[in-house]
Structures are given as C-alpha cells and as structure tokens.
Length: 113
Length: 115
Image (cartoon, rainbow over all chains, first blue to last red; front, side, top):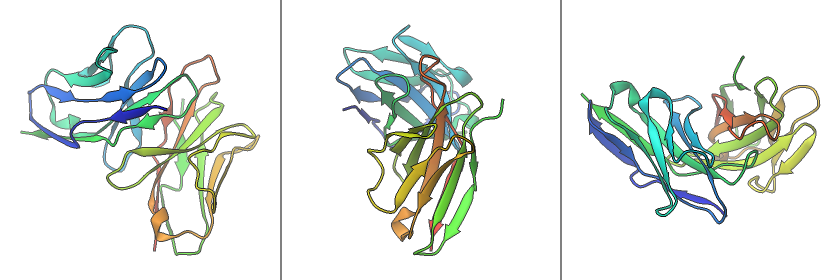
C-alpha cells in the first residue's frame, strides 16, 4: 500500500522568498507522484507529475519538484513566492496509470507581503 | 476542451434525504474516480469506474453509498439517508483510456451540507 506524508500543515513565507513544501512517500513499487494545488472553494489543479522519466520535474507557475528515491521524497519548490501562490497544496502517489491516488493531508501556503 | 464538470456545486440536504452528485468526465476520458474531502483532511478515494463497470470500490462506505457510470450520461454518486457526517466536498476526476496517460483531472467539486 502507498502512503504520503506532508510535513507542515501550514507554511508561511514572505513574498519573493523560497517556497519549499515537503512530501515523503511510501510505496513498495516504483511510484507515480503528483503535486496538485487547490484554491479556496475550487477543485484541484495539477502542478506537476513524476512518472519515472527525469527526476527533476518542472511544472506550471514556476514550480518544480525533485524525485529522490534514496530519501523517498518529492519536495515542491519555487524560487520566489508570489501572493497568488497562497493556496492548499497536495502531494499524491499512485503505482501506475489509471489507479486511485493516495493523497497527503495537504499544506496550506500563506504568502506575506 | 471542457474540463471535468460536476453539478450541483453546492447541495443542502436534511438528514434522511438522498443526495445525487453528477460528474461528466473530460471528452475522451473513460475512467472516473470519486474522492471525498473532509475539513482539514486530504482527499480520500471512494470509487473508480469505467463505463458500466465498477473497477474498485474499496473506499466506499458499505452502506448508503453507491456509484454508477452508465453507457450514456454522467457518473452518479448517490448517498441515501444522509447523515451529518456525510457533509464534505466530493470531487470527481477523470483520466484517459489506459496507455494514454496517468494524470487525473479534477472537477470543481460538490459541497454537500447535511442539516
């Protein structure tokens, strides 16, 4: 079975500062990993995904994530936070295409002017 | 290409009533998933369907909940005799046929409130 742990239910950064949202996963087989963003009262939007190709994955809105098998991590980063990045971020894992996603509990990102 | 559609966006029911949530997948997508999001929680998988088939319902409560994805029309998540604990946001996601990608695309959700 797969699981995801997101360290920090709430992260606060200053505008222009580095964003780092942590995700560790557990999977007995090579995983597919995803980061989604959720704005208030909206659905989830895909930021980026890892499906066993390049370990450094670039996504939308300047976000990227690095798959580190030895650390079972898939942390999300952005060099410079913008006010519009304030949202809830979810890390998710699955083991192949067309199988249910297992989500972490989410990290709420606040950006301070 | 329209995204995943869900309706209604908000649904209020009294205890004991039935709730019907609808999901229309993206064009060309044949896989539908339902997830539930409780306050301060991540999304929890409920059921995975293909046209006319339930593939995996391991996350579905054994009683009162059912789902279908008919040959024609949207997928329906049905909750009978709702209770206050059913209040949550219900999200539908769809993905392309096998071999055409693994990404699930989410709808805007239906927020169910049980009074």
